[in-house]
Image 1 (cartoon, one colour):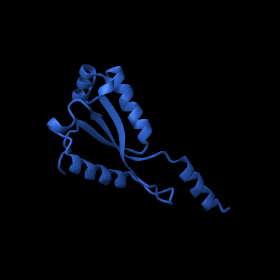
Image 2 (cartoon, rainbow, N blue to C red):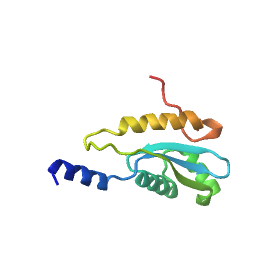
Image 3 (cartoon, rainbow, N blue to C red):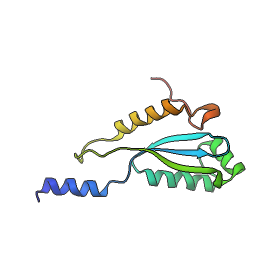
Image 4 (cartoon, helix red, strand yellow):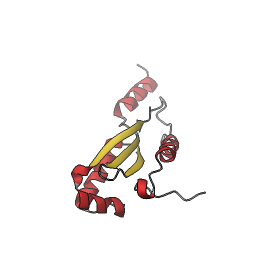
Amino acid sequence: MTDRSKIKKEFKQTLTPMGIFQIKNKCNGKVFIGKAMNLLGIMRRHQFELKMGSHRNVDMQRDWQEMGEEQFSFEILDQLTPKEDPSYRHEDDLATLEDMWLEKLQPYGEKGYNKRKAQQ
């Protein structure tokens, strides 16, 4: 096995699932949409922050405390297939995928916990 093919194989084996996730409030249907290079890690972090009462999204934190943990679900909506090239930057692909989900679900105001991004 050449060094290049060995590096590619190791790269593929070490990648964590990346893509788009959703935190959903089962009581009121509100959702939070986010992207991550490490889906499982980011979902655990959000859950930990909510449990500790330190989540930066004040509205979602308030609902978590009022309605309880059992009223929230954490789901992977979409996963990104990694490119063969270990130097490929997936961040742009993730941002585009996130924009597509935000456009589709419109998780703002009464429908969600996301804040609209400032227009460039």
